[in-house]
Image (cartoon, rainbow, N blue to C red; front, side, top):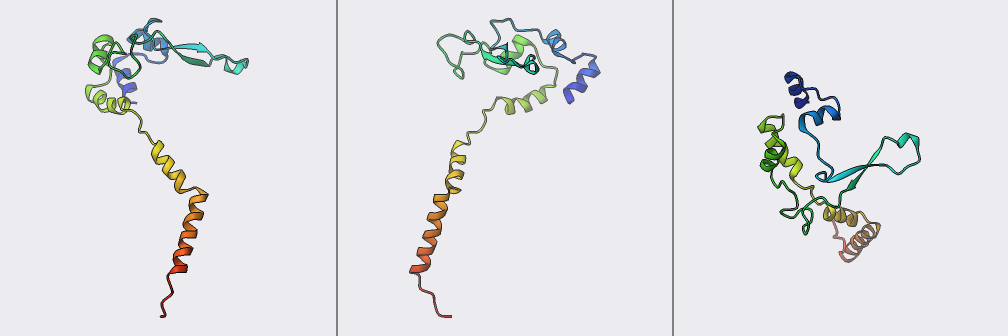
Length: 142
């Protein structure tokens, strides 16, 4: 929202992809990490849908995604020197960069633990263990 308002105040149109490419330029085929190919479907309703296909020639040879040197631009500063600064203010870029660049948390372990705790076998075991404890501990006269 704040970016749209700032663009409108500067008189920069940003209504479609062509407007965006007029301001920022367009990657050549070899620079782009993905290729937008038509979706392989025979349905007329899906003719406009595109499928992202990874470009095998993207990235430096001998390295993999996530390794240093795989990308031609490794930091925000090198990105800005190559493509220019964003329209948003510097404080907004720094604030939002962390949310974009940090990897998503790995929740596999937590979800596995939740499934184990909710499993029917564990519930039966807990119920039998509680019954065994009640059987072994004599009731005290009140």
